[in-house]
Length: 267
Length: 307
Image 1 (cartoon, rainbow over the protein chains, first blue to last red):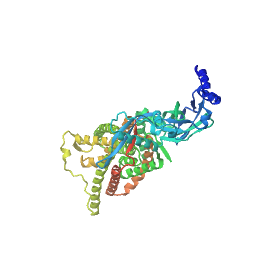
Image 2: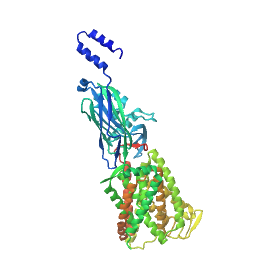
Image 3: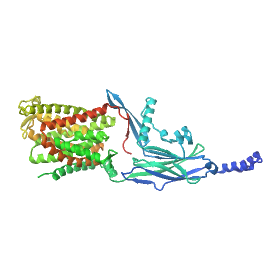
Image 4: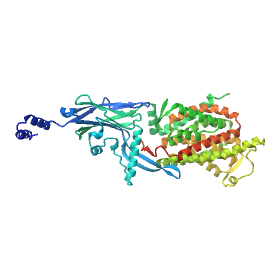
């Protein structure tokens, strides 16, 4: 910063008469870096078991934007919602003696259970494949790391492709390019989809800011998805109090079986 | 109208499930069987994960067997000593079966194993029953007296050591075949979700020579306790009992069974057995076809436990 007056003087000298443009260049150098802030109306979503999916709206603002660059669309934003990460196994069947058997399996470490992405335009138009890959943005770039696999890379690739395909088919992975709208030059609204089968747990909203294809910065916000309702309590009981759950299952069965014979008794 | 099954983690049509329960209840009332061997494959056909189908099937058999067990107990038409021996070995077998279940599940071979076991069991039992009942039908047609297949002579089972006297059944029998029978049925309860009445009853009549009067009561006594125990263990260790699914099936099943019993009383025993045999074979064939047909997707994702 201390060198700025000197730089301004130098540029004034070098540029001579083109004072106007020199001023603009200097101003850009002075301009603090752009930033992104995001906010949601809630950081917890309670969903009931008849939930059929919903849209989650995230508001955000860009700070210190250059109005000119903004007008010609040099700023791009990508917003993702990543589900809780778990190790996930995928199996492949092969025909053995005429019948189909799971013969191979692979476990990918810490894979998001759900993934929903939206952006200002197609992500391949926003930045390079390499950058997307480094930042893990987009369904094709979610890192699928098979910790205990040392075999054929082509096989690994087949498993990865099958995994992505199945996650997309089940609606857990989705992308909605163009789902981000600028409300004003600095204010934007992003809509990501929560699938019907959205997993329970802490999800993470990521917002990435790009300028002219270069990644500038990322902001994160946690979003807790809590399933409510009787089905959820049953799931918790089945895993948390499994003995009591089993006992009640048996007692219900005994009661219904016995009650049936009493109700329908002819004599 | 759909309902979410929390353990199976899928939404199902409530009417389909109730229909399945009623149909299986009807058949189990008609043929006097628990229905586990019918409901488990049906659930698998409806894309319920086989592990869940098996554990929930066991739970269902508890409901469909308890009223029969109570009435036989009241009337005293059971051999308590024989039943207890079958029961203890059944509990051991069920425990072993749960272990096998957990190992197969971790290896990704559970679904295959369940299907194969069903194809094998239903194929064998169905064929044997069909042959036997067709013979009986022919005999009836020729107007010959139906000989009760329980001649006095002893077979190899009766030459085994460790003999015990079962007073109620009036038999003097080695404990070994009894334990073997109870144990293997216990294993089947765990890995296939069946009570095993349709195996136990003929095995007791033909191999152990138990008088027919106490066979049904004794087998129901064993089945209620073994399936109840299996449900408990499946729920505790494998978390594979879906109570919502079981509840719908049980309610529909209990109602269906009442009508099944009435229809069953109007049919002749050998016709009934022939029909049951055909049904058993049909389910077995359908499962076999599914094993051989190329699956829609050869890949399957297993979420590695809960977060």
